[in-house]
Image 1 (cartoon, rainbow, N blue to C red):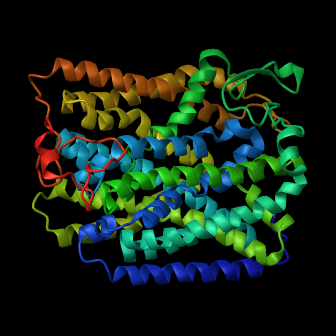
Image 2: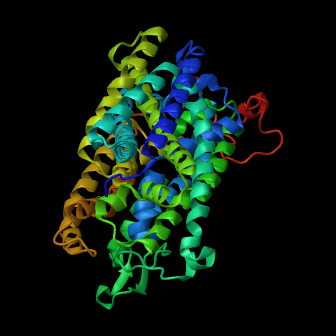
Image 3: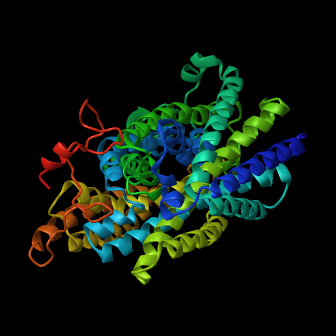
Length: 558
C-alpha cells in the first residue's frame, strides 16, 4: 500500500516544524553541560514530573506504538505480552527492588555496578553487551521513523532511516541527558494527546466499547484477541485445534509466554536507558515513585495502540504482512482522521520514536565513552571522557542504522535487544545487590552459560517452530522463516535465563576462596548501605535529598 494521501505535504511540514523545535531544545540544553554528571545524568536534578516523563517517553517508542499496533492486529493481546505488558512489569520491579539503591550509589552508568561489584572483566563484558542491546533498540526506532518518512514523503525506506539518523545525532550530541529529558517530557504530552484522539475516532468503527470486547474477537490466527495466558480455547477454525500461546501448547507454550513477559519484564532491568533515568532523579524517592507512575502511564496509554490495531483488524482484516507489521497507525491516521488531526497524530508518532531513540543512543554512548574509555586509559580526565562520550553518539547511531537496514521489522528487533540482556546480564546484576557471595568468576560464567544455553535451545526448538510456521495464516504460503526464527529465540530464552542463574550460584559457591566476593560500593568507593532498599517509604527513612540519615547508615550490616 503506497502513499496516496492528499495531505502528505501538510504532514511533512508539521513534522519538520516539530523536529526543528526538538533541535532547538537540544541547543538550549547544550548550554547546561559542564561535566559528565550533567551530560549523563542531567546533574541528578530531575523531579518527579520530569523523571516520570522521561521514563515513560523513553520506552514508549515505535515498538509500543507502531509495532504494538501491528502485533495486536495480527495476534491480539498475545502479540503484545512483550510490550506494553512486560515493560510495565519491568518498571514496577525496577522501582521496588532497584531504583532506591541505584540512586543511593550515585553511579553514572549501569556498567559501574558490574565493574565495582565484580571487577574489570565483568565490567567490560557488561559494557559490550549493553551496547549491543541498546543499538538494537535504536535500530527499531529508526525503522519506525523511516517508515513514516517513506509513506508520506515517498522516499525509499533506507533514505528515511538515514534522515532520521542524522536528526537524532545532532540533538543528542548537543544536549545529552538534559536534551533528552526536556524533549521527552514534550514528547510524552504529544504522544498521549495523539493516541487518545486516534482511539476515540476509531472506537465507533468497532461498535463502541461493548463491540470492541464482544464482536468477533478472533485474530488472524483464530485465537481470541483478548487471550493473555496460554489457553486451551478452541480456535475459530476447527482444524487449528488448541490455541495455546501462538498455537504452541504444553511446555513450549509456557516457555514462549514466560519468554515474552520476561524479555522486557526482566531483560530491561539491566538496561542503561532505564537506570540512567533513575540515576538522574534528585532523590531515592523520586527514582522509585517515578517508576511506578511511568508503569501506570505505560499500561494505560500503551493499550491504546493495541486496541487501535484490534479495531483496524475488525475493519480491514486483509492487509499484507509487511503493512500489518509496521504501518497500522499510519493507515488509521490517513483513513479516519481529519487532515489537521493527522498532522498532530503523525507528530505524536515521531515524538514516540525520537524519545526512545535519543535515550538509547545516549545510553550506549555513555557506557562506551565513560566506562570503555577508562578500560583503555585508567587516568583519563573528565573532559576527555566527556569528549569521547559525545564522539560515540554518531558512531552508535550509525551502527544502529546498519542494523535497521538489515532487520526492518520494528517489534521483533526491539524485543530481541532485551532478550540479550535477559539471558546474559539479569542474574549477575540482581545478585550484585542481593547476594553477597556472588563473585566475578561466577558472574562471567553465568553470562556465557546463559548465552550458550540460549543458542543451543534455539537450535533445539527451531525444527518445531519451522514446522509450526508453514501456511501459518491466510495469505502466507509455505515456510515463514522469520516467524519461526523469532519463535525459537523467545521459547529458548527462559532456558538461557535458568542456565545463567544456576551457573552463577554453583560457580560462585565453588570459587569463594580463589575469588573472594567484593562488597557493594558506591561510585566513590565507600561501602553502599542496603538498608531500606525497597521502593516503599515511611517517615524518617529519608532526608530531603533522598539519602539515608547517619543513624540508619550506622545500622547497616554491610
